[in-house]
Image 1 (tube, rainbow, N blue to C red):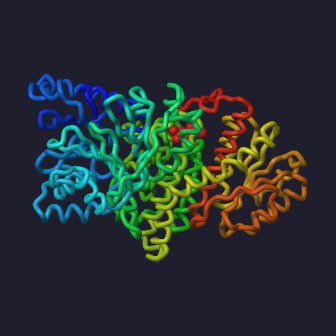
Image 2: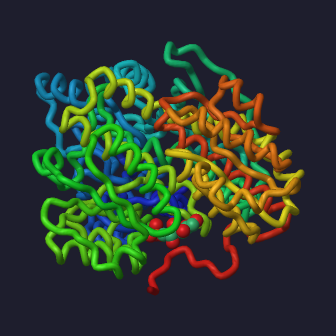
Image 3: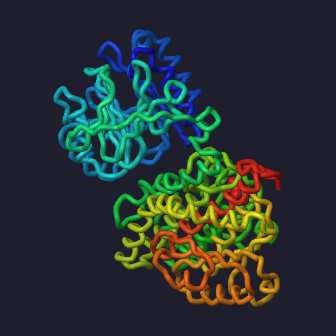
Length: 611
Ligand code: F6R
């Protein structure tokens, strides 16, 4: 909002946020008491083309010359398909109010029903559109007050910004958990979900906190809490250079992406856990009867995705009691696997382009199995080759070492496991609900983990960064965490690592240990914790230096290990998604102390399309 024509500024701002991933986009601007809106499926060049086409159409050209207030959005489909109608901005019945929203409105179905009964007409399948109609219902000439009244009726996690044709020099935003930040320019003010969106225009920012409503107009910026009490907030100056801005202020993409993990998981589970006792995978094209009766699941993947599959195997077998086989795609495809009708093959691939995974999926399909792809990239080959797709919603990952896509894949596997258990009734309703609630809490626990372990992990990295070898030990769900932690260290630090099932130690590997070997033990809560504890004792008896990852409050681990890093408590089977965080950070700090380029390690490409 300001005095310059804003449409181009808005689209340029969206470009800066493209890395988050999206499938459609839109922009609305207000001028002469009229809102012009353009939306398009696909990337921003499609939106630009649509803007161009409408501008040439006549009516919009007038607004285009004068509009200095507007909102724009890139959408990643959650509620409703990828269509122009479902793209934001969304409007109310009178087309006088437009909104853009990030996040999820959990009580959208109830609100929609009430609003429809009152005569409101909806034009999209989204949860977001509710907000435009709610504001319409509460609007009495004051947009801020209408937003405040609407805000109090919404449940979920979201941030939104609203625009009203009758108040063209004003924007009102509200924040519940999802980020919202203001930028204060010279005679103009910005609201965005992340600083890079407006950094080219201003470096003066103001944080909007959880539960706050913000109004920007010609007088500047006014923040109030949900009750309307004015809140004072200092202006901060962003000192990032352009390179740092691209990395959101972090020194590397990998660190930025580690910090994006809470969001990656939150987005992936969002609308799929609509209540505390239900898992909704209706966006995945596999019917309930098929899933309920599936005889066997085979998971194929490579690298980090393979490790996510391993966690999934434990969860699915534990909860849904379906037999699960797991194989490395490059092995599976060459071993004449016994596969056919009645089998569900799950191909996990963040890029959706890994040649071996695609080949394994194709082989399974040719033999009559159904294939589900779990991928992060819309339109990727995996989505075209599979019968059904479960998208992770981690956003674009630039660092070569997979971090946020891994936790999103693990979250997707948990969703699949819970849905299977729900359909097969292999968990009591109480246990299912316990797990759903716990899974919903994982994003904030990842955030807590990143904060709480950082100093300790740094210190451990400093004392071990010049070691020649690291061993990782774990059992059960701890084992894939070890495999993934060891992979992270070797790929970005070039330090040899081995990851072993702890029970195998005595069958050979124990011979490698000496007093200089750091041994990372994943010892989070699990039915095999006792056994892991004896393995730690066994290793310490050889003088090796044990670093344990433990569940908070589990004092016994700290008694046996040399150093302990604690992660927050959650259901034991969900612990891998937290336990991996300190191991990612350990690999990261060791690589940085050795002055390696963590974003682009040698010999590695982000997408492996050759066989
Ligand atoms: C490691 C890493 C790789 C990938 C593997 C599979 O950090 O990123 O091991 O996991 O190349 O890639 P996708 O998941 O794209 O099939």
